[in-house]
Image (cartoon, rainbow, N blue to C red; front, side, top):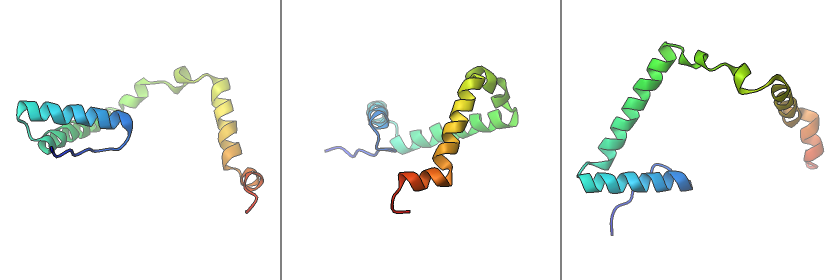
Length: 92
């Protein structure tokens, strides 16, 4: 029986981690060392993106139209308002 270590428990993550583990086993690479370096590179790339303000390249106005933003805001207000929580929960 082989030792299976997974970083997450959801379906797609489980499948991905199984494939990565099998690949590391096939290539003779230590699984945890491989995962460590993946996280180091991810942290480095994210740090560069933060320093260069790369998120400003994505304009929120292009992602959501104004009417969609308004509808999402109204839904958020409804779900977080105190009165709506009382009407949905009889024990409050």
